[in-house]
Image 1 (cartoon, one colour):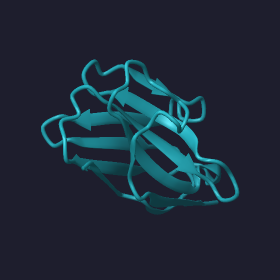
Image 2: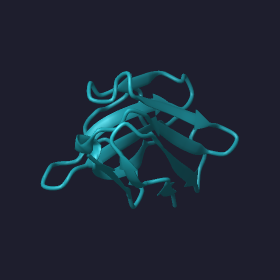
Image 3: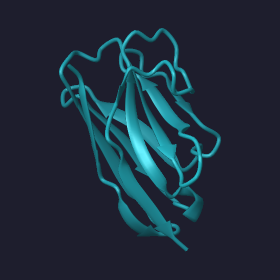
Length: 125
C-alpha cells in the first residue's frame, strides 16, 4: 500500500510564496516519477511539475516555469513544490502523485498510480 500525504497549503497574497510537501510511505520510490498536479475550481486536473526520483530529471508546465521549483529529499521520501510569485490563477487544490513504473515523465493524469488527498492553495489579489 502506498500513501501520499500533502501539506503546506494555505491562503497567501498575490506575489507571495508557499512550499508544499508530500510525504510518501509504503514502498521504495527509487524508480518512480513523482509529480504535482492541481485542480482549479471548475477545471480539470492539470500537470504542474514532475521529477524522476532516480535521475532527477525535471519537467515543468509552462505556467510553473520560472516561479515554481520541484525537489525531493530521498532520505525523507518527501517531495516538495516551492511556489514563488503566486498569482490568483494559481488558486487550486494541489495533489502529489506517483507513477511507480514510469520510464518517462508523463504530464497527463492517467499514468499516475497513486494520489494524495490534496491541499488547498488560495491566492488573494
